[in-house]
Amino acid sequence: MDGSPFRGVVACLATMHGKQWALRPLLRRRLGMGLRVAEVDTDALGTFTGEVPRVGSARETVVRKARLGMAVTGSPVGLASEGAFGPHPAAPWMPADVEYVALVDARSGLTVVESVVSAETNHAHVTTDGRDRAVVLAFLRRVGFPHHAVVVRPAAGPGAPEKGLRRLVDVLAALRRAGAGSADGRATLAADLRAHVNPTRMRVIAAAGQRLVRRLATACPACAAPGFGPVGAEGGLPCRDCGTPSPLDATLVDGCAGCPYRSRRPVAGRADPGSCPRCNP
Ligand SMILES: [Zn+2]
Ligand SMILES: [Zn+2]
Image 1 (cartoon, rainbow, N blue to C red):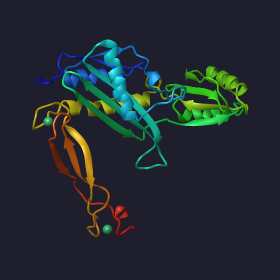
Image 2: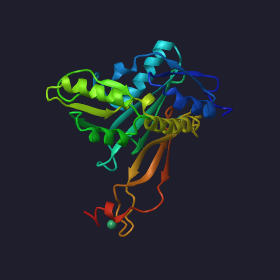
Image 3: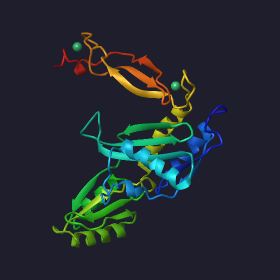
Image 4: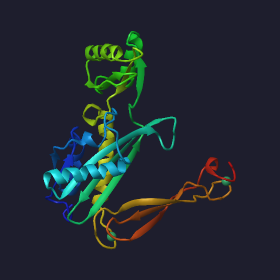
């Protein structure tokens, strides 16, 4: 850490949702970098509850968010995080949380984005008329209520979502209001995915933060710029039974964000015949 180019720097973090609690200790410990919260309306870049659709990918949004914080605070170094919820890329029947964390350093032109894919998520929703109390209670148990908050909105038609609900009495009242405001009399009850009311998501953000600081603590062997790490992979891992190249990663490529230097690491092991184009066409 002594040689850390981030030592003594106070970066800004654009967040309204308490993400400093996950990221600040990591940055201080590994990079000697401080963190202050940039008061910017990150919801203007898109919300999980759909009032503001997100434009562009999560990877693009996280960099835009970091730059927004830098513009507001005048800080030369900015951080941001952004999550995306959907099917797991490796197992589409499972829900997944993909968390991106970015650092933008205007002093050196460095932009580094790291991400973590986690099956640990309570991303889920149910539609109910609110009368079947067992359905409501089972859902709340499943999403880890009340440590995790929930959101209620009308199932059909417009109507603002009620967010951050953590008391049963509030959830039931919100379900009645949302049902009354819905064309079909039903309400949608969903996990609140905002980090400050979703400890499961906060843990995944911390895991992405771990990757980011590890990468920022790694200097490029060619030019010594920080942020050397994984930039891609090449397929072709040979099948265990017949040796045919499979689509699985055979080589991991590390790269520098500041110069063209790349290094390649072979992946140990062999592919399962289930992934082999010859054994399992
Ligand atoms: Zn380099
Ligand atoms: Zn094979």
